[in-house]
Image (cartoon, rainbow, N blue to C red):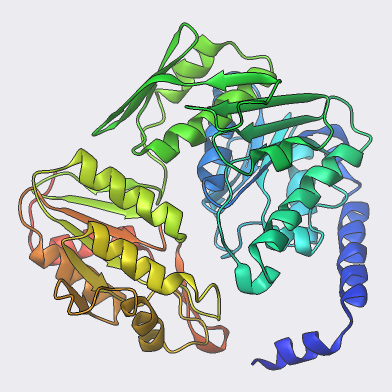
Length: 434
């Protein structure tokens, strides 16, 4: 256990909560409560947050609004954007309030931000006047941190409770009603509630619904209809259809016409590090952030169903730092169910032994499994996957997506980008691509 963690365990939770609340108020006060004069949209859930933030921002921007956004992919304020190099999905209170002040000073009408369970635990959402909260989905994550799945869900619920108790007018809740946890999040008070889905799980939801019909998943995206409007989405996988529905719901409640929303979505051709297609020929290479069992299964399921000509080669690891150790063998089990070849490798070990993390994943593989190999160095693992791939195969590299840092022990961070590693190794191997 680190010295920082030992000190933290000696301090009463009430003191820690007070400390975080004071910081939250201090940041808002110093930057003059910027969220009071800008529409703030928060996106929360286990997966899909970054893509949903990006889609919402692009749709609103395309339709004439000046928008700021903060996701794990990048930070935007109007026409200015830069990669998120913080290795944090939701920044600290001062940085977040500074971002909102910059958005306000740049005449942005909207600020769209990811809201994480850790951010809620540390009260980073407080003194932000949210207008809309979007719920994407919920599955087990950060269990060590929260103590149980139930606590994790309740922590997410604190954001909705915070919205319901705020004095801001025209408060909105948007939820994925195909997710079994949606009734919990839709029970909180709001002026408007809307549910989105494909085949609604929450049949008793009496509010307005946005339902995608005639969903057709293709090798390059999907098509679906909402009422009489046809949507074409150039993002792979069913889960991206859900992310698009969340963004459509936000735009709809902000008064945009469905035809205008569809015209914006069709122009979004990729999402950095999220089912991002690096090359198509002679074999396919995809990079994805998938860091939960549900997300990993969704990625593999999509790629095996859309490309049946060759083998699926999976390059994967798991995060260290004592985080969600329970899911490591689950990753191995899922990879074995879908991949023809598996390469287990390093990801973000933090203060853990990378080989121990890999061993934890290995425990989920079937006994006498012969379809995997261990290559600790991630760069070498990616090169090996590319060397072994032949025409028609799919290589999928998961865990880091568009992240530009790898976190090692003692706080060391080294530059990293799976996508650039792929391109470098393709050149090194002299593989002609398209």
